[in-house]
Image 1 (cartoon, helix red, strand yellow):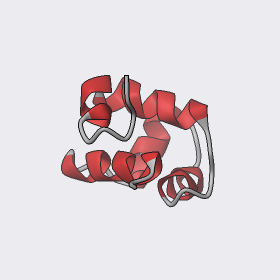
Image 2 (image 1 turned 45 degrees about the vertical axis):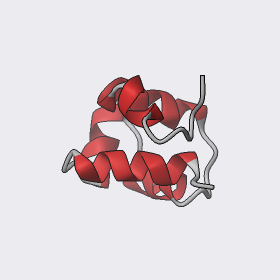
Image 3 (image 1 turned 120 degrees about the horizontal axis):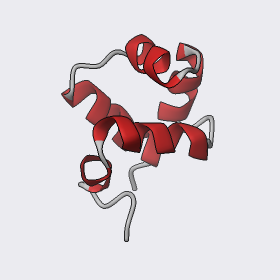
Length: 67
């Protein structure tokens, strides 16, 4: 089963956004983005910002986040 972090990474990469760029846009350090994408940081704050940045539908596309 894919983790939410890996799915968020896929979406970020498909949109050609670097970890550094995303971190700057949402006000966190790049290392926190990296930890989140590897599943080493469980952060609702980061997930919320991924959803705001890329859109809820895009993040949910793979079924990792179900309704």
